[in-house]
Amino acid sequence: MRLWTLALACCALLSVGAVAKAEEYKLTADSFRQEGVPQGSVTSFKWKGKIYPGTEQDYWIYVPKQYDASKPACVMVFLDGGGFVSEGGFRAPTVFDNLIAKGQMPVTIGVFVNPGVVPPSRQGALPRYNRSLEYDGLGDRYAKFLMEEILPEVGKKYNLTKDGNGRAICGASSGGICAFTAAWERPDQFSKVFSMIGSFTNLRGSQDYPSLIRKMEPKPIRVYLQEGSNDQDIYSGSWYISNLDMMWALRYARYDYKWTLGDRGHDGQQGAMLLPEALRWLWRDYPSPIKTPVNTPQPIMNVLKDGEAWQTVAGDYQSANALASDGKGDVYFADNATHRILKVSAEGSPSVVRESVGEVNALAVAPDGALLVAYADKRVVSYSTNGRERVVVKGIPVRDLTVNSKGEIYATETLGGNIWLFTESGKKKLLDSGVAGVNRLVLTPDQSLLIVGQTALGGGAYRGKGSVPSVALSQIPMLTSYQIQADSSLAYAQPYFDLSMPHEQGKHEAAGMAVDTKGWLYVTSNTGVQYCDQAGRVNGIIANPDFKPTTSVAFGGAKLDTLFATAGNRVYRRRTQAKGALPFQAPITPPPPRL
Image (tube, rainbow, N blue to C red):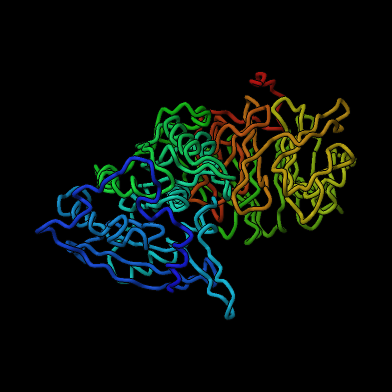
């Protein structure tokens, strides 16, 4: 038996008409061969990939008769491809033939991909079926599989458009959630989604999507959802309720979506009937681009400006990290690969501040304008505005530091799990210890709280000196909030800010943090720049620039209304409706939070 047949045996939903006692949804004329309609060709292939090691995949390529190699063709990917390419199920090639002939969809090459199977290593052993791994989880791995393996391979034979506006993706059940995930993660690659009876339940975390849609900066994707009111209700959740939740989330965030509800169970009968309608709707105005939703009620839109996106202001460095703002609009950052500290001016032009320096862990600005640098060789050095260089602290491997309006330095030491207080005169005081993976830190605008991020380190515990309950850090994606006392010591630590965890990442890392004058916290992560209210809740997520994880963040610009971020080898900026609060400036009392 072929491997794709074995994989599809786990997906009975693709057998059209599997549920009794529900309305029969009959295929329309567009799903049957029509006289005089040019017929495309279907060819089968096999693939052995690297992103999913050891897997073998069957896939098929449909090429319409109207294909012209001199013109880039649109492309549509189907998950569980064997069920869609056959003439006994969804009949996608026939539907393509009819709609392309009528001009109701563009000339489109279909790519039908089955889930991967790892063949058994010995006789009598089972293969490893990758369907749930590939389809049910969040994250960009499957999108990368298509972008880096399957579509480039198809592109060797056919001229495919590289414009995401000319790319669509479709699937049913777990394939439906995978289709949405691919577009969600990479809207630049897939802009149109048809999800039938999508598995948006807690199989591998996809129950989080309705919340993410409400919180995340809107994306330019179009979504057709089909569901049945008698769909399954099992250990991971209710398919009907989860799809309703998806529909309401898309509606809330003003996405271009269509929702069709029938009364079937977990089968493909209604989806097969709807395939022509869904394709017409998805491609209805091509080549006009899919628009990003605007004027949405999402909290993140209180920060973002319509029409403003991330812009590269300093690029092509080997690395870029450790942002710090001086309050005049200039933002400093380090390029450790070339041992330089650089500055991006308020006007946006980068320049070198210091060369031939050591490896930089963190930068901060003092009230007198001095630039403080924490080096990996266990030194904190102050560079004054008149060029004076002075070692403030040595012998402690400081990971991050921030300076309050009194010139006091709060610092973290990851290796020892320590939080320190340094004065400019060189005095040091240990404030907490044993804080596993202690990493970045930031002061609230009124300088009454110190927020500390942590990175999971193996089986380390989350607690410091008895102030936080001992809980496995990898299970608790939070930031700790300390109250600062009159003598600048710390008390009443609580795991306070509850972050959104990227799927398949068994830890969280608050790689960089900043605050605005309203007391809202901005935290970089693989998910995006997470926007937290004072009560510790993620209210919004700003998309990462160029789909790269952000590593540090700071407010800069002449009005402190521009958010700067590092990602990969570049520094980006984006104008916002917020105004940053800098720790070395006079404290600002923000408005009280909504509880």
